[in-house]
Length: 202
Image (cartoon, rainbow, N blue to C red; front, side):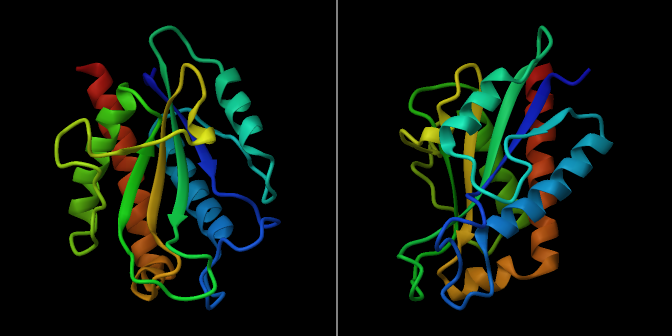
């Protein structure tokens, strides 16, 4: 039995305005679900239990995502690892911006999500060596950004929100539209879960 139970959370919904590139070629809701569903297939194939907070293409609300996460059952000795898949934005989506790169958010305070965030940056540097890593601090345990993001507040759940590239940066959008780069992202998230599992067994 795996100690890590994965909860995949997808960005927004197709009924939420904006959340796309200024050119309209990239849509965050679609990208998030396509990546997440591929990640789910891979993780299940290697023995992980995987849940989705929202298997539909429409928005269900942040509080409902949290309740779903809290109500997912686990066995004694297991933990729930919540991974929300997003793209970042520096503006309102109407024009191209200069900010780019990757970052990860956790809830305020210290828990396993901070360790998992350290794994994330190490993995992403290996998979995407030319893409900027937007760290809160270079110090281990403090590399993630922390905030009161509603979707990360589930009790008894170790939650991260990944902001993978900027959907209003031209260079980042080209990566988001590239199937090879998206496969690398999927494999990187799988790698993250496997490292979290190894960490829990040490």
